Image 1 (cartoon, rainbow, N blue to C red):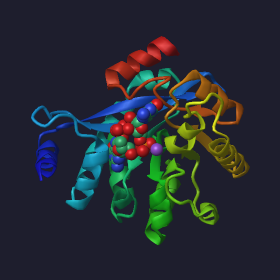
Image 2 (cartoon, protein in one colour):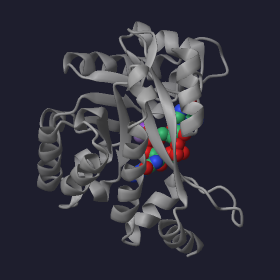
Image 3 (cartoon, protein in one colour):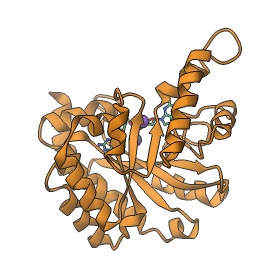
Image 4 (cartoon, rainbow, N blue to C red):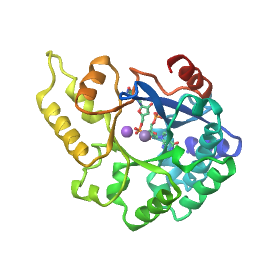
Length: 261
Ligand code: G
Ligand code: G
Ligand code: MN
Ligand code: NA
């Protein structure tokens, strides 16, 4: 396919760049973490291609381990920036696809790159989608254990989209749960004023459950002050979304931190 060829070319010619979306830590009133997201730089001939589209193709075509290596290398190179430490940044979140999560080479690959740039593993938070948690078994747990022993932390990404078998949540250790937009937005999305009461009941009870499991909660897709206030009042301490900032370039992120904290 065209996208496959674009990916092959981008892997060969350094055609990827990372953008960073700041995450607001409400207790500290500061942006103390960020999510790294990959972008293709040169798609002038075909227009913007979302990772939502090209990551699955990279997986299918056997390119995801190579792409994951490029992504992680870029994040670790950036993580050396003194400014991040100066501004109190605690960790950067990096997405892992389902195939990366269960690949036997993953822990070694990531460890090698962290060593190369002298990055403390505690500075890296690995995002694994809820679907990957649900679908994969022993290999995922083995990889997570190794990476956790090195010092990396974990987020369960896209929570609310993967038919959570809630009983399985006790089997894996993660530090953060990222509430998917699809759990949050319906609470605010209605023509008539006031909140949607069914969506609200579901969201509020999920948050109660997660708080009892002692994980930190990140809300994704926070687009308004109203959403931010509502979620924070429910005990969600980490807020991410366009209300605060879109994903931005390295330079823009460093500027953002200089101006905002
Ligand atoms: O910001 P955005 O449109 O880029 O993200 C779309 C989707 O692509 C999200 O589900 C996100 O998790 C995924 N994604 C973005 N960057 C990466 C990456 O570096 N690696 C992987 N595996 N997925 C990514
Ligand atoms: O699946 P994952 O959570 O990794 O994907 C993050 C995606 O969400 C990225 O595509 C990012 O650009 C997007 N995103 C982040 N904040 C917002 C927001 O407030 N609104 C919308 N529509 N998308 C957002
Ligand atoms: Mn994510
Ligand atoms: Na998500």
